[in-house]
Image (cartoon, rainbow over all chains, first blue to last red; front, side, top):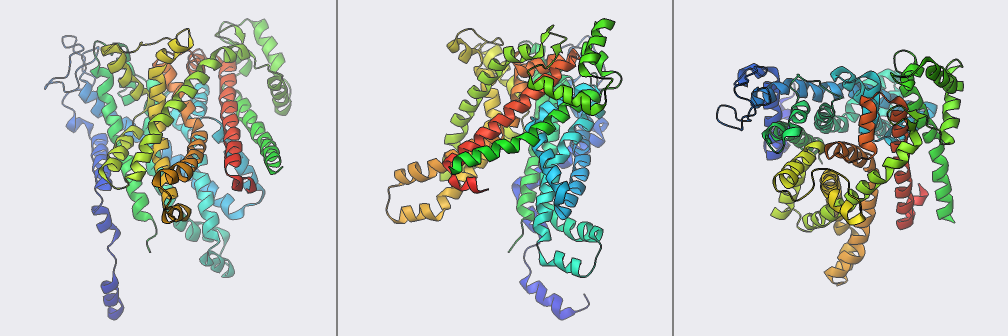
Amino acid sequence: MSDATVSSTQAVVRKPGRLRLALAKPGFMTGIAIIGASVVLALFPGLFAPHDPNFIDYMAVRQPPSWLHPFGTDLLGRDTFSRVIWAYSVNMQMAFLATVFALLIGVVVGALVGYYRGIADLVFGRVVDAIITFPFLVLVIAVVAVLGPGLINMYIAITLVGWVYYARLMRAEVISQKANDYASAGIVMGYSDRRIIFRHLLPNAITPIIVYWMTDMALAILLGSSLGYLGLGAQPPQAEWGVLIAEGRNFITTAWWLSLMPGIAIVLTGLGFSLIGDGLADLLRPRG
Amino acid sequence: MAGVQYTLNRLVLMIPTFFLVMIIIFLLVRLLPGDPAIAMAGDKASDADIAAIRDKLGLSAPLWTQFWLFLTNTLQGDLGRSILARAPVLDVVLARLPTTLFLTIYAVTLSVLIAGPLAFLAAVNRGKWQDNLIRAVFQVGLSMPVFYIGLLLLTFLAAHLGLFPVGGYGESFVDRLYHLFLPAVTVALYTSAILMRNLRSAIIEVIDAEYVQFARAKGLPNRLILGRHVLKNALISTVTLLGLSIGQLMSGTLVTETVFAVPGLGRSMLEAIFARDYPLIQGLTLTFAVLVSLVFLMTDLFQSWLDPRMRLT
């Protein structure tokens, strides 16, 4: 605010801010609302679950949905709705922990090979080709098979495979950013490579990565629950959506709600993340 | 000639990739804590069995000699012996492969039949209610895990309405089409969600392209424009997209086979994991990688055949 004239002219030609644009996007706002609510449920499941998720009641086994038990009860008489709510902690943790390390590794590797190119870049290209030659799930479950089933090993497996996708994206962005004048200016000014890569190129190259991250979090929930369903992710009796669905799969004729109700939570959160991803892609696109 | 040159170049490029794929698969079992020979032999193996495997894997030799042994054995078709099936891994793979291929081709056909017309309808009615409805439905579809789609279909169409069998594989071709209909629809719904999204933008891009606008200005009937220009380009996009999503398609098939108890490669993979049958896990992982790289190759060749500009890159 040092120059009053400049700021007043800016005010006249000012375009609507990103926040205002965001508020005008119903899809994006729905995504924010869903994920916001999911985070609250994940942090404080006890406040919202009507029953104790592990309370066994043999007098109320496999009850259909009712006012008392909106999602019915399971084989041990546990309230499925409360178990779905408690599972938010695990499944939301999945969205974050299964992606964040892949993101960090991928960003650093991608930025370095994109900046220096050379032999490292050639090797990187082959590694990417090799890893995408495996179906994602096949490689992840092969790694889980070696490390042993469980949440932590699942995160390690997904990170080992998933970083490649971030790195590939980051590499392409850094290469295109490096061609800009501001990057050459940095080199001419004699800045260190580290400063150019991490202070100048990275902030300009990060947008597509963040957008991809949102989609990837949706994928992580789908993947994590699939592994839970297959018996390779979270282990029973832990309440996790895939595990809950697996517990009911032998009763689809007699107690269909056991498998079908927990899936609603997966679809909702997945939808939330992809709506945010789509909205961000729109909002962060450079405006003319 | 340019086509032959392109094909050769493309084949040569596969060699280093295949080499790295082999390194990854080789290292996978070496990551196991303890002696890989004990793991590869299974729980019920005798000391002599373990010694024989240790000898075959060359475990006393340096790592690169071990890798060389693994590579040459694999290239000769020797993938080791499955603990679970008590048979060579190659036999197990070959026995299960036709089922998975059948299911995959079936699913691809269905997904094109689902996504193609809908993407076209959405693109032609861009921004209208038809477009919004189709996109909203597929957005929800994208957020559904495959096993959940499968369970939904299984619960309602098979278990409650009795329209389809709950499991099994079928004997004759027609019987197989009927038995595998729900598994194929499951994979197809998942794949068509990916396909539809990209196909819609691809069709819109063609409709907006100058040569199509020109054809329209020239007074060519709409039917001819759509048939000649838009469909041909939509076909290229469809093949490319399907080729590139083959990995996801295979992942989907793996899960679907488990849900519907279809005796294919995917179900075999899970059985192998729970039985700690590492030779079979290795063999199946390799098989999946080979399938994917063959599809990548075919996609590239098909693309270069349809669109000669691709040969330049």
